[in-house]
Structures are given as structure tokens and as C-alpha cells.
Length: 111
Image (cartoon, rainbow, N blue to C red; front, side, top):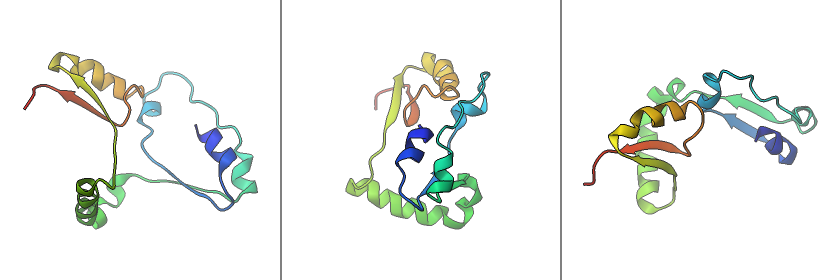
């Protein structure tokens, strides 16, 4: 995916990198990055971040703003919803292999 992004970036693009859990526990070699020369040619800035680094400073403000966005329909999200407590082990393991799309949720009852 990053290969296609780099190829299509504008000059001076900024790319935030976060949430690579599917690669953190992989037993296979990570995929190589192609088109890395585009970072130099286009002066692209790549920066990794971890939410916990800034949560203490911005967490409360984030919750307020994004709760409002959700309620107003300005923010959309995707979830992978699986039904049944018996599916929990497979869903949990699947998170580490990138099998979910968005937030992984196990629904155990209808309210």
C-alpha cells in the first residue's frame, strides 16, 4: 500500500504512520518498500506516532471534538463485527494478521 501512496504523493507530502499491528507479530519477512526514491524526489515527510505519546495532553479535547463529529455524522468509521463469544479467540488472533477492517468487535448479545 505504501508503495502506491509514495508514487502518487504531491511534493512536500506528509504521511503519518500508525497501527501496524499486523506486522508486529508476523512470522514471515515484512514486505519490502518500493518507490522509496519518491521520498527524496518529492521531499515527503514520513512520521510515525503512537497515540499514548500525546493522549495525556490532547485526549480530553480529542474525545469532545470527535464525539461531536460522530453525533453530527461528520466522521464515519468501519467495524468488523463478529457474532458470538465462541468466535473471540479467532477474532483476537486475526487482529495480529490484519484480518479485520477497522475496529474488531465481538457481539455477544443483542440489546
